[in-house]
Length: 312
Ligand code: CP
Image 1 (cartoon, protein in one colour):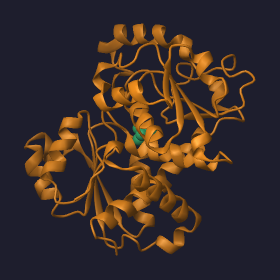
Image 2 (image 1 turned 90 degrees about the horizontal axis):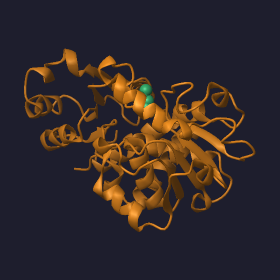
Image 3 (image 1 turned 90 degrees about the vertical axis):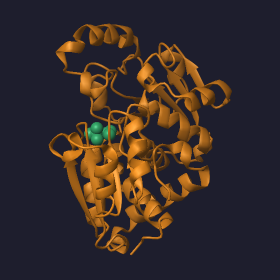
Image 4 (image 1 turned 45 degrees about the vertical axis):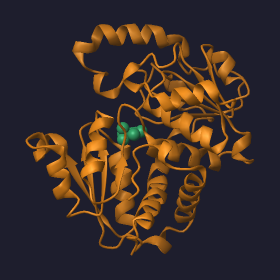
């Protein structure tokens, strides 16, 4: 059975098929409104979410199915083993999407599940976001994706890990501007590091100005993991990170004269990784990008259910 723990598990043809179906369903949603008729998906959340929760729930509804939100903290996942709870869950739903702190727990869910499992973001990967991001770049770029230059400015994290992977697979040029590679050790990933060392399309620089020159898309993400952003116990660590990252802020001076689209996976922290002014800039496309989560999820759900031989 196929799952989506990360984008390493898909080949480029499969990624293109998901994106193509996402665009097809977006153009003609009524044609697919019974694709997942009477199917139910469990959405398991250890962490907060707006977009991942809403887009998956709306996607299931619009495809004729149903999504069930499960808050980890108020479920019996807190009392029992992941394997037992998953073994039950996968006998009552046809797909599981999980947003967890640790990728190792996602692997436990995959091992115990009888149905496809989707990674809704963990400390290593955010595959659904990267699929959305390429779908969005396709819509905002007139030429071939292989001519696109994406500049990611910020910390190397789960989002940049998945972007590096998808860009490498699709032949998109990507520059990551970050003070240090895998400085965020929780997100360190050997496969991604290998791509950075060997791919001639994926580059690293410590200079954000160099990265944005000739970029078609300039992308940023929060500098601090969302669960730690307002945590007083992390105040000192957060302040040090904010000081280190300040030169990497997306602001009018950095993007002065750059003919690019501005992307952010959201949630946005105004005045930190991006200025409020730039979120209102005519070049900004982050709301369209976020709205595309819905369409990318539909393409992904089509692919997973089709692979499982379980389409209506
Ligand atoms: N980008 C993203 O995953 O948004 P949420 O954290 O709100 O789901």
